[in-house]
Amino acid sequence: MTPHRLKMYSNPLLLIFLVLFFLTITGCFHSSSDGWDIPGMPSANPTGYYNVQGTATVGDGSGGTLVINDLQAMVNGNRFIAISDANGLVYDGTMTNINGNNFTAAVTVFQDGNETTTSTLTGMITEGARITGTLTGDGLGSGTIHELLYAVSNNEASDLSRVENNVNERWFDRVGGGTIDFGFAIGMTGSITGTITTTDGVFSECTVGSGTISPITGTSLYTLSLTLSSCNISSVNGDYSGLASIRTESTEIPTGDRLVLVVSNSNFSLQGEFKKDNLF
Image 1 (tube, one colour):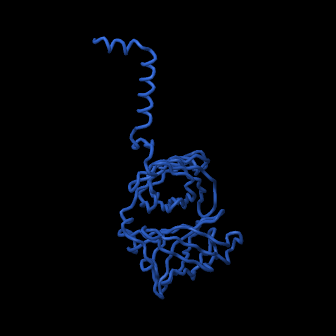
Image 2: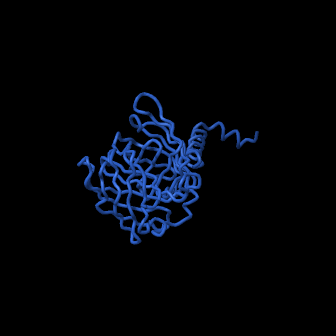
Image 3: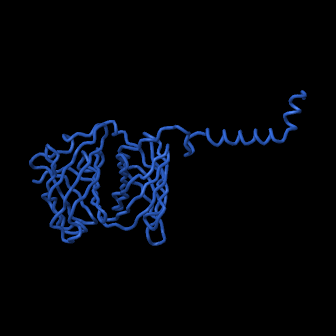
């Protein structure tokens, strides 16, 4: 060993400095693929529709677990909405912080139209690919979102022509745990009017007093607002807001588009996969 190397390694202060320097470098400049963030890296943009093949495992509220295989989501700005139509579930909330690939969201959990609990969702965004996360709360608000998958349909811009009805058409689905269809029409300017009312479930006898739907520029999503009136449960009446997207089905009958729609207020959430059909 050369004399200058011997001198360097025999200096304890210099060795401590080198170790601290090495730890600082390895702690700051790591890959973002493990959920950490590189300093100066721009925050991921989660906006888009996430297809119906997402998966999650959550508490069922009775000490067991609920396995979800039809989790889909819509994200616009800081609004986060995830849906399991098969289980009547909605996770609707606000992304309170996005830092690099990591995010935190405060969500309200609804089942069959009713608020059940609140939860905190912390996770990771792989922009243009997937969202994963952990729910910290009780019952349906606890568990793991294994993945929400960014949909190919995000390349198709939203447009009113895709959601409007002709004079004999309506969008139909069962809502709020009900067994009878709820229906509404969308006009060419985006106005929403209700003509078919369900007779059971949380939204029994509700009609759409007024409503609007608007494409979100540069996305496959729509914003919408509804005012419900004449509901059997008086507290259900009122203003709701949310998001919607079109999903095309080739395996269900009737084939065609599904209007995936969620509107919520502080206590109730109306969600569905509405099918376009004729009144007569």
